[in-house]
Length: 245
Image (cartoon, rainbow, N blue to C red; front, side, top):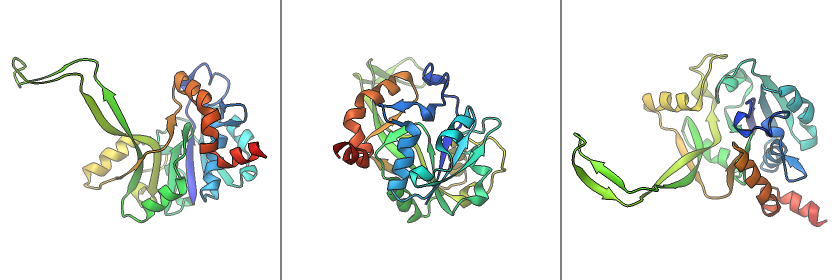
């Protein structure tokens, strides 16, 4: 099994932590960077090879990870000279990828079993399966439904809760899904989804109920570090064993 990790972003929202280090290399706790946690998890769930899509401060990621051998992985790189979006970097290496593979952001902490997720996708005929997470947003206000003219109230809801599913930034992809696009073009996840839906192709949703934290803002990073003592055994069971030894 093969994974493409997107690690080329500037991490602007996470400044000042990313002023001198790329976001995937910021440390969690006092032992691992985000990227190291992900690499260890991929190896534990059956992956043997990884493509790292790098850009901003990519030389630091390349120097830190190397060929991946210390993680039990074979790691190769693809460089973005200019930002290509979420899916764009994959187009440049598409011919070297297996029929089914994983694409994921390099700033995610989760105990999702990546191997099982990809295997479930492979048992379907979906063009892409998105790992999704349940979210709720509670309104601070009473919500009024009005008629088309905007002059009459037709319904009222006191501080309703809106329930929805969000993308976890982890995708199981079938290679042929991306054949229609040209290497080097900018391609975001949003564009891909809209293109597929426009063609009548239905992406799959794989709802996950475990731990997931997208480290996009300083407060997310602070949360990750605060939770690390409790979450380390969940995210990295081998870490808990080594600590006990």
